[in-house]
Image (tube, rainbow, N blue to C red; front, side, top):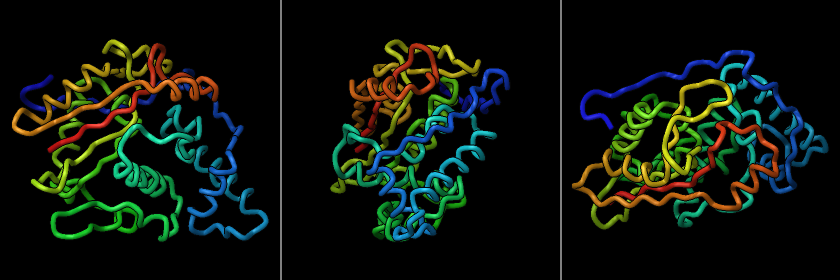
Length: 265
């Protein structure tokens, strides 16, 4: 863990021959289809072809995004799939999982209905907050010390160890922690290993996987000893089984998807 300047290494595009072809077989449950139809703003929920239009949009987004970001989560349609089971966190934290949907939708060009998008807010000390879906910030500096909840799913494991620490530092300064308002929370999903180390990546990328133990030490180091920190992490059995059942391409041999949360204050 660094003590001076940040160590930051940007992502490098994998060798083309190592990138798997797109999987166009989109399987959505009735629950997922209903959710998407009532979430994407310019699709008429009452139209007979609403489901067909949803599938067309999802495949179009996948094709466009995969050309630049050949991630397994894009290939496996993770960006539109609603979890069948809740994350192992408190209900107040689950309410802000909309951050993932709003941010992803903005980047990929999917407009959300205002009635859906306003579910998530960036909390500030002086107000209930501003909808992240209707007003995307120009810089994370605008959110320094103003955010109560941060979802960072499937993000850290794209980078090497030093860059992951640099990202953690930048997310930590966003948190609004004050007496009497309860802890601020960072949470998400992460491709981890039972023992920390470099990932045996299927596309030859340089990536690092923490273990649950080293992941906790990272956040304790980043946040320091002058504030109360609790780190919860683990490998839910249902997650491993669901990934295998779905036949998704393994993003790193010997890895597992880990749920985690960091409670601060």
